[in-house]
Length: 192
Image 1 (cartoon, rainbow, N blue to C red):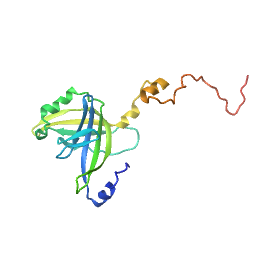
Image 2 (cartoon, one colour; image 1 turned 180 degrees about the horizontal axis):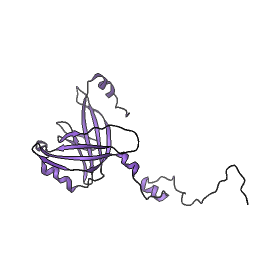
Image 3 (cartoon, helix red, strand yellow; image 1 turned 90 degrees about the vertical axis):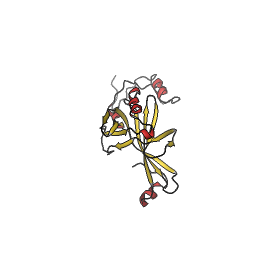
Image 4 (spheres, helix red, strand yellow; image 1 turned 60 degrees about the vertical axis):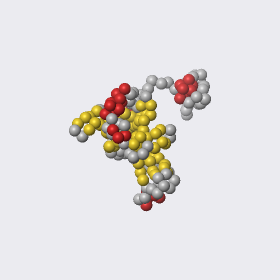
């Protein structure tokens, strides 16, 4: 279980706290945030805009390395500037396999001050089908959890140069490519 920010657990136990959902999409053209609230919120360098989010599917946890699917449905909300035309611009974005994070933001019930934010689910966007019917225009982001990373392979060979791309200045693999193979004999004498 992820730890809660200071003071939040006590307010949750009392049933006296305000919780708002945040969603952050890190697309190729920039980072976009939405909050289930009437007012925007700026947190960690991202301004979360109100409105639009109408549903997040069940975020059930599980064991194992299988990726789990979840969906996020955004609806057109002209009052918040999310017209169908604006929502259609998602097709100009690089969204496939881009990160998405769902958070809970905790606010003090009396002062409205932000007490803390906790990530509930991290994943990647797979597809975003559009739907227009008599109820309005919606986008549904079909996502998969980050357990998807467990099934991915890469062709990298661990070396000093590769480690410098990942963590500049790290010298852990500095001599890895210059060391030869050493044969170690365990529990016996090497025959000549």
